[in-house]
Image (cartoon, rainbow, N blue to C red; front, side):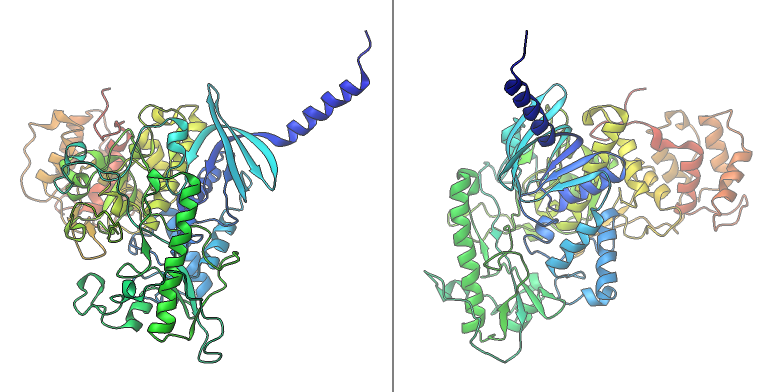
Length: 616
C-alpha cells in the first residue's frame, strides 16, 4: 500500500515543528522576581536543568523590575545569594559606602544595575530563561507538569518534574488547585493575639515606584511630568510635614523625605508611604483586566506625587529617569507587598517569630530576616482592623522549609511572598533579602528532590539545609556568627538543633539574635540542649560550671560507649580550635559547637516539618 507523499511530508514537518517547540526540564519556574531568580540560580548550580518563564525582559522582580532598589534588612546577615548579590553591587559602585546613599538602607542601587548583575549571575549552562513570555496553560500529570506559553507570538510547551510559583501575587495557586490564604487571618485561624477577631480579604497597599534623577538647574521647566487627571495636591500635603515622625527617624523637611531613597548617581527612588504614592487595589476581587485598569490609576497617583514634588515643593531639578525599558519610564511591574499565601506543611505565624524557642519550627529554618513587622494599609478606603504593626516587637527570625511546600499538591513549590505565612508575619517575610533566601531554599529543595528522585515533600530537611550551608546561606539568624568564621556551618547546625540557643532582641529596624560564640557554656545548658536527642544522659549530674573536656568525655561515653576518646583530641586539633587543649578550661560556645557537631553529629537526626524529631 502506497503512502500519500504529501501526507507523509506533512507528518514529518509536524513532528519537526513540535520537536522544536517542546522540551523537557527538571524545574520550571514561573516568574523571575527575587525568589524566582534566586531559585533558578541555586537549582542550576546544583545540577538541575532549569527554565524560567518571565513576562518582562529583566530579572529581580521587586528588586529591579518594580524599582524597589533600597534593601530592607539583613545588613549584618549577608546570607547566600543575597550576600553574593550585595558584594557584586559593592564591586560595581566601589565599596559599601558607595551604596549607603539614602537613609532608609545600607544598600541602595540603580534598578538597571541590579538587573545586569542578576543577568550575569544567571548565565549558567543548565539555566534557560524565556523573557517576554506568558504562560497560557498549566496541566499536571503523573510525570509532573506541562506548561504552554507564548513568546514573541510563538507557542511553546515545556514538561517539568517540578513547578515553582515565583509570581508576585501567587497567581498560580488557584490555577493548580493549591489551597491558600488571602488577606487578614482571624485570631482563631492564626492563633495570634494581634490578629483581628474576624478574617477579611484586605491586602496591603501596593506602590508604583518611580526613579527620579537630579539634572541640575538648567532647563528648569523642560521635562517636568504632566499634571495628571483628577490631581489633588491635598492628598500629598503631609508627605514631608511630620515633626514627630519617630517611625522614619523624624522626617521634618522635604529634602529629608527625598533622601530616604536616594540612589547612587544622583537618582531618587520614590516609594514613600506617608501621604506619598502607596495605593490600594482590591485585586483579589478583580479580573486580570480590571487589575490592569486599576494599575493605571496607581501610575497616575505616583505621577501626581512627582508633579507635587516638582511643582508644589519646588524640586524642578528632579526628572523621571530613563531607568527602565518602558515607554513611560515607569517600572515594568508594581511593587506588590502581599500575595495569595499557600497552605503549607508548616504555617509561620508571628507567635513563632516572637518566641521561636517556644516551638521547634526554628529547627527547619532555611532563610533569615531581621526586619520588623511592617504593613502599609493607609490607603484602603474601607479601612482595616486597627493593628499597631510597628509595636509588634520581634527578634530576628528564620523561615521554615515547610512553608514552601503545599499541604496536598505534590511536585509544586512556592518561592515568593506566597509562602505559608500569616498575614501579619508576611509584613516581615516579604522583604527583599528574605525572599532571595526563600528562593534559594526553593531551588535547593527542587534540586535535591531531582537528585534524590523524591517528591519535595519527602526530601530530608537536613539535606536541604546542608546544601544551603555549602552556599553560605544562614539557617539561624545569628548576627555574630559570620560566614568568614571557619566554624560558621557547625555553629549554624548546632543552633538549628537547639542544643545551643540564641538570644533574641527586638531592636528598632534591625532586630537581632546573638549566639555569643565566645561565651562559656555551662554543663547544665549543654545537657538540657542534648536531652531531646539523647535522653539516656538524663541522670548525669550537670552543674552551672563551665563545660570541660572531662565532662564532654563522660557524656559521650554514655551516648556511645564505643566512641574512641582519642578522637575528641583529633576533632580538636583538626579544627584548630583557639582554646587550649587541657582538662580545666571552660569551653566556649564555638568550641562546644565544633565538638558536638564533629563527635555526636546530632544534625543528622531527621525532623518533621514542625521541627520534631522523627521516630527512628
